[in-house]
Length: 115
Length: 116
Figure (cartoon, rainbow over the protein chains, first blue to last red):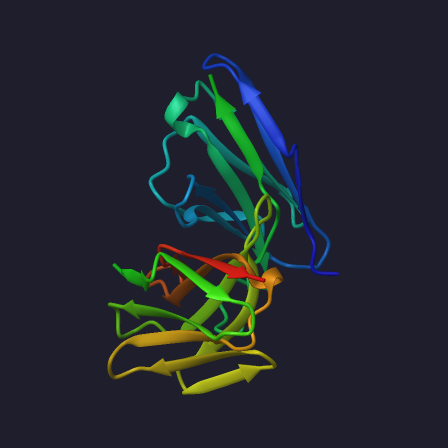
């Protein structure tokens, strides 16, 4: 099973709302990632967690707050977002994150619209 | 940092034809080059990858070639089928200096349309 599950599939929120995106994998992977993908653009890395610790933050605004409660779960907490934050948010996982043999497996994404 | 250019941005072929997508990268330290296929409403799915110590890799109708000297790599799809229609992303990866993580940088994508 190489499945990464993301919920919800779609989310509409106002600029004053607080919402969370969830990601789950049961492949025993120890690295998990959040990417942001705008329409007709490639995915852009936001955060990397390794062994449940934040390892990379690509200078993402603080209105995005990641959390890794355990090795299978990854959350992205959203607060006071802007309309330009509307995008497809992708979660990915890989066995370790540091091996050249690592393959990243992506979920289907959460399509976020900020009104 | 790494920069990955991808061409063409769109590619239309007839079923049964071959399709070639080309990417160039800037950082000679990049050592891993995956290709992802993204269908509408789905996340990217790995279709083939190549390591820097290999020049060519083939998997059925799909092949990837790597020229380290020229810093470019290509995806070749033979006998294309309508279900090959999707957006294809190349990526380059290297170990980040301070964290040791393999960080993927994606190309700009190619929209492939295979007409029956």
